Image (cartoon, rainbow, N blue to C red):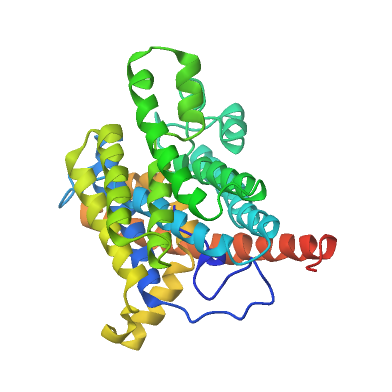
Length: 363
């Protein structure tokens, strides 16, 4: 998923006394590009896979890359912000940024589907809404239906942020132990994959999927890039670790094209992390547009898919073709994302953090 504005360079909330760093346009551009890949995958490929009555798209982007690359970016910025100060405040800030917008997104999407979904399309029941608010789908997918399938990344990030918080508090991810922990996580994911695929154990599947082991290598890749950028690990070691993450991704997805795309995306992330900012190559207006759009991408991610499919179908009923439907999906994502950001995500985060700071002032 997109990293929140609390994770963007120049917007660190982990230590209030630290001056804000200059914003890097390169990260905004990557964030917007990866969210655009999510929209393309959902709008051109999954839309017709799930709703064949939609007219053929002018082109098809069948690669599940955007969300995976956003998880890599999330791992990178988790490592950046965690080392800057109060780890408890860091964890509370992540929860405060993600959860309120997610809860409102679930409720708003559910209401929209109940009111506007075409006959025969999925309309969530009250148990479905409650199960989605509790994020139960990874644990029991046969019992709990997604209100919006894009939500799959949310509990993974919450679990991984919490695991990092617990390890950091236990002083087990400092110094060389950090790199050893990353290798241990990647190897554990890979070793447990054959039992997950072939053991036919529902209890094992529940734990493996529920704790997000099927994509934890993406978070590890982001942390590895951050360690490389700080010279905590050498280039060959970092490349080897990132290659291991790519290999695990291939084993998990069994899509060579998705893995090639992931490698290219991680390469772009490495360029952004290790090299100079890209602002020197761009007009100022492009940088400002990228900055504004990057600030709303988490909310865009939350509300575009299920609502977008309904809107595309309703537009088709009124004679709008595939190109117009895709344009409408993009406009809808930006509009709803902006509204959810300014009305829920940012105000809720500020209010929660003010309350936290009053209860636990910085020493």
